[in-house]
Length: 331
Image (cartoon, rainbow, N blue to C red; front, side):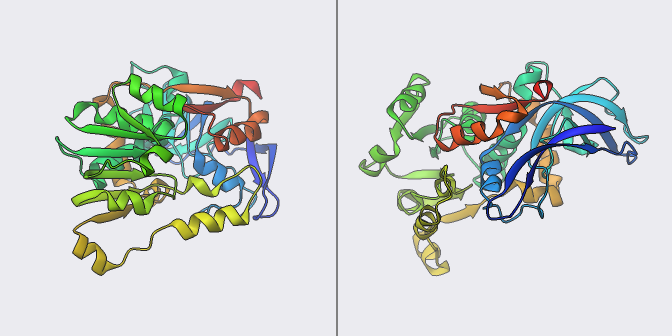
């Protein structure tokens, strides 16, 4: 079978983007599926790969991408949960920026009835990250005071949605006054990052950081037994690769000593969802819970595969509210 995909090629310190045709073998394992991809989700981790800053990336050239939705074309002989024609969504350890995929059957689920094909294309990565962050690591409880930063991107939206079944107080951080208003319209106490730095709001039970900066401040404002979960370092990225910006962000990353953590009675955790694909029991558990949360993500913009660099730049410029997708019908 001939398939098309977005490849990162060139030198690792400055990858190039190319759209190539390649042969996809149709010899399925007994527990695998062949899928025609409709949409691939775009994540900030993809931008890190594009900038040559992702330590877990495969050797160049490779196909990036973590999530997709599509139609089952063929099933392995041991697969009994899916059939040809099923509409599914799923996650991958790289490779989802492709018109066709072969994946293990555990990596996909049928698209829930409340969700459209389009909505499902950018769901899995942020959902898995939010689920594991809240329920496997931070162990959210009723009554918790929770700080989410940033909270208007795809991950922030998923975190807020998953918390709706809990009696918690949510505080959201964002990059601009206009995005702050979006949070306030949902009844969430919101700050721009600058406002939060100058505020006295504290005593958070859980703080979630995806920027890399503000980690020290978030840690200081935790209550006793508070948990800080670090999910990324988005502040490293700019349109033009900047060693100064990278080093500046790295230097802002607080280094925690064991003695300080014991004396402060606080916890600091990290999360890299990609590494769960090597031992996927937690991912399988999270996927089985999707129907417990009846919501669909906001799709902000849909791009053709040829527009992927534009999509990356708009993410870097913080122009996105919600999720962006690649539409493989536009190839």
